[in-house]
Image (cartoon, rainbow, N blue to C red; front, side, top):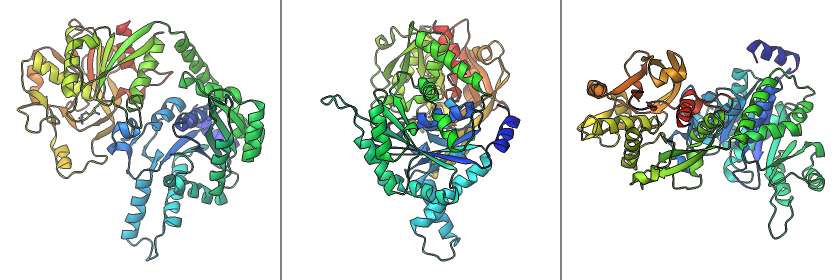
Length: 554
Ligand code: GLN
């Protein structure tokens, strides 16, 4: 939808902006992020503009300092904000690009209040959490609403109802209700277990979770019930009665085999129509074309029978609270988008870089990806795997660290620079093929680790028209997102090029290497990129680099 359409609709239908809060109860891991993203996508599809805020309870100022095994992948927005993986769902489903304004963490809220207190902005008052923290949250939401100027602001409450750390956000919502009465909808996502020994779907935990919300002064307007199957009439009645919600505001969200089915299911259930009815407005179907495309892509996914095996070598394989799929979320989604586009079904062969010893492990893969990573653990395994892909003409895509390690492998095994490494691995390296620039070095010396990498959008110039990069992008200038500290060391450019490495993309000033490749005559698809294309792929717009990789496999 064009900007003009947006404005017209805002004026005609939405006199004021609306807020949709989304919370989760009973258990964690219900997929609040995907539910929020799906509702946002459908609202947009019905002709309304949307944007998202994620309220994260943790005290980290952003997700950038967290190990992916703690909290899943760190997603990077175009303006270089390091957000949690839900940002990826919002962008991929609702087809928007977020900015740092969409991220709120308790760390940010506390920091801001404490800074204000230190500069006497509260005029000598005793600064209690309520109302000062709460006001800070409300102010941030209001500023976001004003700046984004959209019809609907979807606010996802991180964590699960009933835990201590997210209460402050619910208190903010409760206080907002006074001022924005009639503009707020609260959606509560619950889980209905079917204990095997009983064989019956139980509603009590969901009712109790709503009671916890009620105790905080929040009375949800719509229930989304996750379970193995659809709710029957009796369960809907029980939930409606127990939660004080009309029956036609209780919806089933049964398990699905493919997360991209969720918005289609929500659409069939008419969830968004029900939300709009609260504001006495109707859908406008200008963007329905997008659902058509979505459905076509989904059908292709369902019909993709032929399997391809994709090797991923990484170190975030051992699982903590979050599993390995969360640690590489956007990479996995990008693989799916591109595979389904070519009517094949991807099967991931996980290779733990710390345990990787033998090429046997890679024997039957169709292509290899080394994704982003940090530190020296597992690096030698990744380099060995890259060597295998290079020598055996296995299609290879190196993402960020995967590009840097491909250059190191080439330097060691083709240019015979035995000690080739990155200064991230060895600070005093004799041959730092990948090195650190002075501004970054200073940051490390000062232990200034927060939000201090080369982050977000950078333009890249594709300087070789005969390259795979040009073939897939079909463009001279591209824009991609970054998240790294180390760079290709230009002192080694000549020796690497003379041995056959191709530099096919650089920053627009030509100073930093962005893309390296092998000649197509030597290897069909061997490409390493200093950026993260995985943040820009979606179901209906698979990323060119992943399309190139999968095409080569088949
Ligand atoms: N560790 C490398 C760097 O900081 C690569 C980072 C990444 O893969 N995102 O430069």
